[in-house]
Length: 192
Image (cartoon, rainbow, N blue to C red; front, side, top):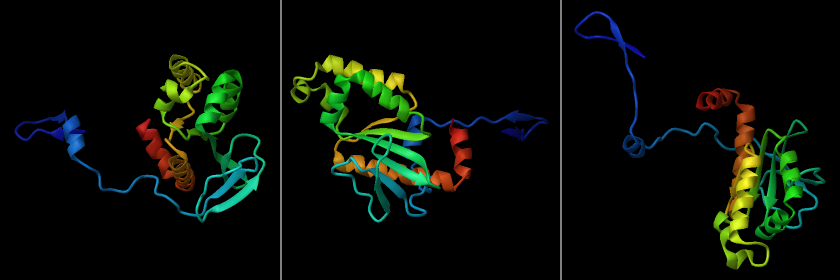
């Protein structure tokens, strides 16, 4: 931003910066860019899910999904997709890591996709919890490899079933809001 000198001719570039302390002291009271729930979500739950998550009053359909467990549908197309992993499911998938890489590669082809794990990251590094599956060091290397080889696929360690369900619902709501409000693309571009 250019600003005129007060005591002489010409102008100068005015630079604004914020310190970490200043950022911490200022709490934005404005609205989030992606406000929740403009309309009902159209969620498809894979018919193979034995104990599916709940999505409140939104429109739920059960059908066979070719990939993954939960999908947000817009105009009869998959707009967002979530792969749900329990702790035990993730442990057994890591034992067959090449198959897991193939699954995540396919999942990465969707614009909005995520893997949501119903466990904490630290659970995979606890020899008491992983038991016979592997060593904590191997498990840490495997989880790091997943993040490195699939960099555009968020892997969320939600902690438990309830929090994983909640995160996925909010994820679908944010995707719907982004889809319905094109000004959010401008925000995403500016942030990038």
